Length: 304
Ligand SMILES: NC(=O)c1ccc[n+]([C@@H]2O[C@H](COP(=O)([O-])OP(=O)(O)OC[C@H]3O[C@@H](n4cnc5c(N)ncnc54)[C@H](O)[C@@H]3O)[C@@H](O)[C@H]2O)c1
Image (cartoon, rainbow, N blue to C red):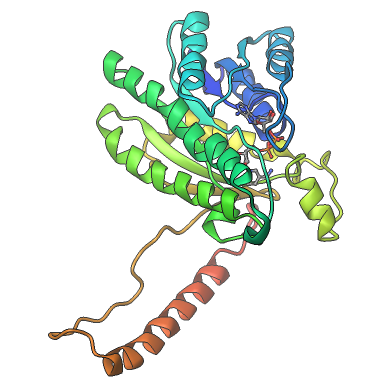
């Protein structure tokens, strides 16, 4: 008995890294998995057959899987990805929008092609794959489906040299909040993962910062993300919706979302003097809030 018995899942970018581990864990937990991957280089160029390799690995271990090599970055690709799952398994319950690339540059050097490629795979890719799935949910009145979207601390906190990627990843968090409202009537949950794992996308960045990286370490590698995704995709997570879940270095946490921390009201148009008084109080409240969140967000031991 697995927690995903009888479920059909689509995992994009599942030929490598985090997506591959999610596909393998979903299958181990009883799901039939459509493994999508274009098989590109880390910058999005090229293509290869990694999706079918992972599907074969699942089938060799006794699971059910099919593969698809379309790009998530086109409307037609997104439609064919859903169609491949329906052709193979008849229905679809879970969509994991995981596919991703990087084209890191400071804005000074960022060419239009670097901007467009990253926005297309990440932000537009979420649109291209989710819209057909959302329409399928509505047309078939399918209940209790799951959508897991992939954001990043790059978009949620900010990271030097990643304005294209950070914009896409912040956009994905906003996309998810809206989608959770729109699909609520079908009891479909939409949650966002902010992962941290040693993969080909992050190992060069970490090595550049002088961090030692061992992708085989289960608390650093992509395999630590998968069980959290499996739980969120399972019936146990029906009440967890519109959340951003941070999973990295063996920790699992819940992230704060935009909220007004402190505010003032005036009975006249704000004067420059008013604002000169109010802004320091607002900044102080923000600083105290951030400090409290930082303290309370420190990982607690599970054994405690
Ligand atoms: N690794 C981390 O620490 C980290 C941190 C924050 C966010 N993320 C996000 O997690 C996701 C997975 O990243 P990863 O680290 O496993 O990277 P990865 O490069 O190991 O895997 C990403 C996969 O996506 C595939 N892909 C790229 N473009 C595609 C397209 N157009 N259509 C279909 N497939 C495509 C690639 O071929 C690759 O196999 C990405 O969305 C990434 O932005 C990762």
